[in-house]
Image (cartoon, rainbow, N blue to C red; front, top):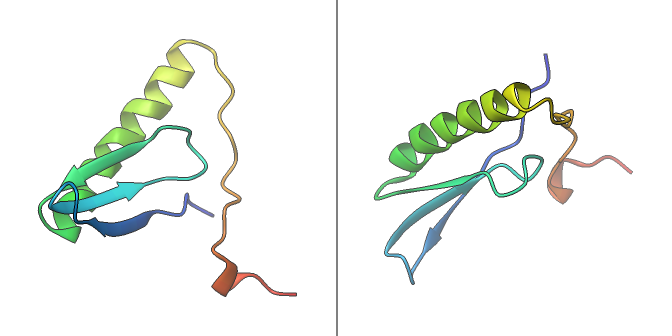
Length: 72
């Protein structure tokens, strides 16, 4: 099964790490460490998907791939 890609990056402005899921619009989370940001974004993903299902909204299939993983 293919799952959603997660980006994790350091934000100097926020003094911590941001994790986001590009395929799920506005699905992101903050953590003081990369692992904490990952744990939080996984919670956010569950909430995002649960909310979409409850409201009968479309759920996009995972498709985002960073350029370094794309094959020409």
